[in-house]
Image (cartoon, rainbow, N blue to C red):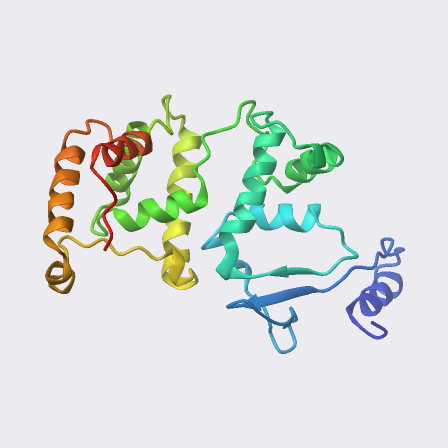
Length: 257
């Protein structure tokens, strides 16, 4: 924009420092979305957007760097702290492609080099590990952090999470220090996201007992089926998704509440 910060910087470079400014490139604005509504382009004058501190409290800085680097600068980009998990998923996918853990889709094949280079340029830690550290999906961290006691210390939380990941076969080998650090960081960021920005869809409340209003509305048939389901679940040694599904299959009929 004429008279804007770019023009001022060019003038200062030439007249004050006596150097030629870097080559300019045009770009689109970055929009800000709150609760699904586009509230306008980010800007410092009236401050529309979020601060770097707000971002790093809910997601890794590398995620934001990757999205900026990979995105075509001439197309408008929007960000929403409500949807942080979506950006993290995009970044995690790029990481798996970089390390060859995932195979690219036919569409990704066309710009695989761009994905890999963007991921590499987004990194703050150097040198990059030779093998991909353990990757805890963001929404999995969101679920874990809400289903464990809030009174746990960070060390206790880590041990409980690692135990669950092993029981569900998501984690099948011993963790290195970097992997443990990444898990801990993602759990903390997920907890911050849940408490500040997460839509109700992603908020979990664990009930220790069934509310009396629900108990009173159950038929004898439903109560009987719930007792059978409980008996089948008590037989499960390892609480994995497959084992829980099998226990539910062994219970006769569906329980309609």
